[in-house]
Length: 343
Ligand SMILES: Cc1cc2nc3c(=O)[nH]c(=O)nc-3n(C[C@H](O)[C@H](O)[C@H](O)COP(=O)(O)O)c2cc1C
Image 1: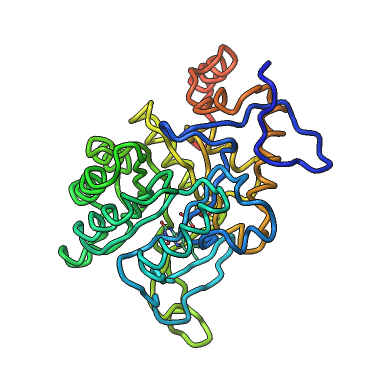
Image 2: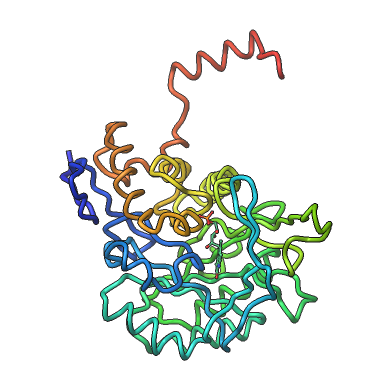
C-alpha cells in the first residue's frame, strides 16, 4: 500500500492512508482539490479560513486586459439547487492583477492557475504575452466562454474553430513550460468535438465545465430576475451535466488531463468526477456558503477512496470506464431476456 501524502492538516480526523497527489499534465499537486475561477477571487479571503497554499492550486478569477466593472445589477439569482450569475468578468485588468494578486499568491507560495478571458483572439494572445515573463504562473486556464466581438458575439467555446484558434494563440505566446488548460462550455451539441479541437491546437489539459446558460423570471415583477436577462447556472443542479461532459471527453481523449468542475459540495461528489475521468476537481459555488469547503472536500475524498480500498487517487481516475465485470454482464444478459418495464 502507498503511504499517505495528504496535502492538508487533518486536525483531529485520522488521515486515511491514501496518496492524494495528482497532476494536470506535468503540473504536480499534493491535493486534487482546487478552487474554481470566479468563486474565490485570488484567495486572500479564503486564506482567513484555511491555508490556501495547501490547495491543489488556486484558480484565479478570469482576468481581462483592461479593468471592468461587470454587468448591471441585479446579477445573482438563487435557483433550486443552484445559482444564476451574470457578473460579467468584473476585474482590475491584467497589470493590476500581476502587481497585487499574483505577487501576493507568489509570496504566499500558492500554486496558481491564472484564468484569462478576452473578447478577441488577439486579446487572449496579448494576455499570454504579458504574463509570459512573470514567475508564479503554474498554468493558464483559458476561459473561452466569452462572446467573440469579431463574430456577432458568438461564444468562442461553442465552435471548434474559434475555440481552437484562441488556444493555439495562447499556446504559442506563453512559455512552453507552462501548461495551458482550455475551459469548455457545456452549451454545445458535442463537447468531445470541441475538446479534440482544443487538444489539437495545443491545450495540455481541459477544465470541464463552465456554467450553463439559464434564466429566472421574477413572477412578482413579471420580468427577468437578472438585469442581464440570462446568466450562468452553477451549483449542484449542474453536477450531472458536468460528470457527463467529463465522461464523454475522457472517452474521446483517454490520456488528456481533465480538471472537473460543476456542483461539487462533498468528497463523494468529487469522487464521481474522479471515477468519470478527472485528474483533479475545482470547487466553486459551495465556497460562498462554506469557505472551508476545499479543505473539507479533500479530507472527505480521501476517506471515500480509502473506504473503497484505493491506496492512491490516481488508481481511481477513470475507474468507472473499466470493462463490465462478470456480475454486471450477467445482469445485462438478464435485462436482454427480461427488459425492464420502462424500456
Ligand atoms: C459568481 C461566479 C463567478 C464566476 N466567474 C468565473 C470566471 O471569472 N471565469 C470562469 O472561467 N468561470 C467562472 N465561473 C464558473 C465557475 O468557475 C465554475 O465553472 C462553475 O460555477 C461551476 O462550478 P460550481 O458549480 O462548483 O460553482 C463563475 C461562477 C460563479 C458562480
